[in-house]
Amino acid sequence: MTSKKTQATRRAKAARRAKRVAARTFREERSRRRWHWDLDGLITLAFAVAVLAFGVWVGSDTYLLQHRGEVVPATVLDIGSGKHPKIEVRYTTQAGQTVEDSTGNYDQATAGSTIDVVYDSRHPTRMQAADYGFDYVLPSLTGALGAGLLAYASTQFYRRGKHS
Image 1 (tube, rainbow, N blue to C red):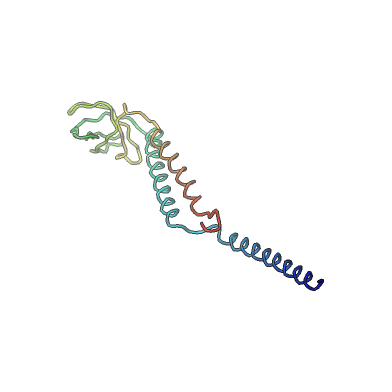
Image 2: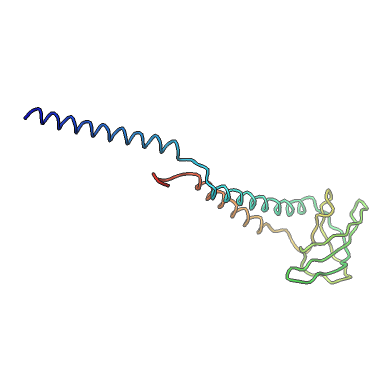
């Protein structure tokens, strides 16, 4: 009777030990493979970086025009048609360079009239109409969207469960 009890006890101990070893092995494997590269995550990460770069680009144009901009009169040469019309203007910088360029950043203009434009003294082709204003709504929205996408992309590289 005692030999049957001891055999049963030994089998139970061996089963518990095997279960502990299996659990430890599973934890070690899981901890080694929590972080991984996922195609969806990489695509989301690339898109987030592109959105953030666009926000920085738009914001830098606004910032540079606001802080380095010089106001000069410009002649409106042509007004484009369509959903987002652009005006083509010609102006002379304070350094004496004549620039002919187009912009969609204007409020009111008529062909042949004179409007004030703000241009960057270091890059005279970076300009907009002076009445358009300097707002950071688009850069802020794209920055927030890019930050959200970046946070979401970072979650795509972390596995949560045994079979994920």
